[in-house]
Image (cartoon, rainbow, N blue to C red; front, side):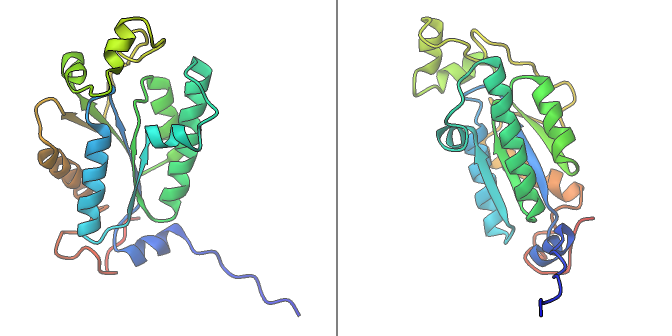
Length: 207
């Protein structure tokens, strides 16, 4: 005789077990704005606090899941679509998902907000082009200015600055520690993260 169907584990149950709410943070900005560095630093801080998080890094996604995609407008849209679906699934597992992607167009970021659903936070890592070029250890900006890289965001392809970001971090002036604290405050303000002394217990969940 077949066993009765089991009730699926809900996102709310996973949040209760984790002791914090699930969410997706999209860190957007120019190449060199510090998105990946900040994402990893936040993930480390959350780990130390006992929270379950995961980083989706744009370069890593393009080397694996999205390795078949180029940099045409259509390929970029598909890259962000697949990345959004991955973030949505991870959030459903109860994780705090930190996505570090250039995401240059407002249309694509709007898709993320609509598809991922609440809680979703668009975080603009705002640094000037001059600051980003100065940080560019790989020399990508120099190659783009020399015409060796086509459709390079900020040089030969546009970056549409967010008009209604949930948080703007001046990553040209704020250091990593200050930026992480801004993100933690945002999560706590939205009741997604318990007070530090309570995090890791099972007595807090976000609706």
